[in-house]
Length: 544
Image 1 (cartoon, rainbow, N blue to C red):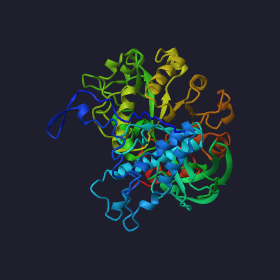
Image 2 (cartoon, helix red, strand yellow):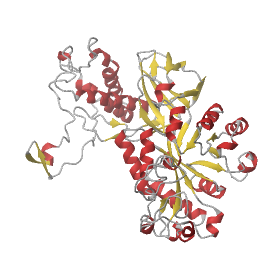
Image 3 (cartoon, rainbow, N blue to C red):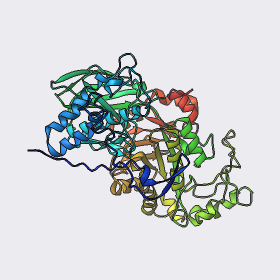
Image 4 (cartoon, one colour):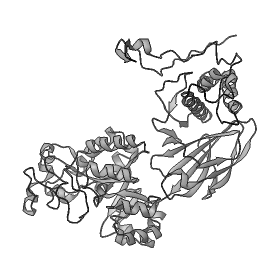
């Protein structure tokens, strides 16, 4: 009996009649499209049935695994593993150059450097397909658009995936991991909060293995002083099978043709740029946030208010402050004028005409003076996300304060806290940033409402004068938040211990003096919010 498998591959846009210029010659899109070219060398060079090498077998390895998962036809899985498990046979020991054309083994990379991209593509596609198959979908990463050149392999890394219901992105930090057994492959991933690192180990042997894994914590997150808090082992279904404490070197059992996932909790001091680093650039502006990204902060801290036309504005104050705001006519806002310049009473088109950067701020004399305005949250998020993509950086995270309070509501300076929260969350969720956002507030009503209506969002409880009234403060909440965030002067060893015992991180604000930063470092706080992220980065991380 012969089984025919049909595989529909959508790795190319649908060809059109649109004209395009190719080396000065006008061509229609369909004439140059590569749709349908997943079998470049079929029946000639590179076929696994020929003498030139296994290029086609390798190219289709990931697809063969996926077809096996659908059909149960063992021949498909055997073909995939024959190509992948034997791939080291095609690496020239002298040059470390892989050649999947047998007759070019020692001739270097040849005329086709793009084959290196193809090689990375098919290997990752195969490994991800095996991971998804061995975990029965408990670990899953989405493929993205790719021109495969040879074969239908997917390209990964454009979007985050799931590891046992936790969102994580693929990564492979150089020199961060060493695995003792050559018959064990691995891929790595990092949770969106940069606090959990995963190593997915695949046993390419028909025998059980016990492998030695060595991690270098300082290489997992480049530029950070990072330690390992705890290591746990999980089988392919997500069931915990072992603990390895805080060790950087440990043994891992893997069943024959099986998978073990190593979950590594990371420990480092998180640096948050308060209002984008208001000691350096105009506060809560796009320019300040971009500068903080360039410095290498872990998180951008910002504040939100609402305009008369219900738009979400990035601003700490509910009014135009005389500290740093210039009116459209070029004169400074006076203290007497503040009460008449309430953001909730102004349409955003009026708000954006007020400058927030040229006048400077006497509290921060070295701050850059530049034309700026209070941006919309949507504008700021678009700008920061684009900036981090341009820099090729990792996912950026945000600590966003909803500036609701009973007093503002009573003075008609803000909407009711539920409306306020819903308007802010609509923008955040529309941008797809829920997993990278922490919502902070002094208002317990906001946090309780968030926990009820948006249960997947991280929360941070801001505390001012009553920071040491730990139990009394938490009694105002219907749940335990992710972060306890007091004024830094109230933080001591006892408060840190209480927060950690309750399962919360502790994040003091606003810490600018180097002596205070050093004191908090000794107390092992989880992070700091600072107006001078450059100082904190020099102290806590590896920045020059």
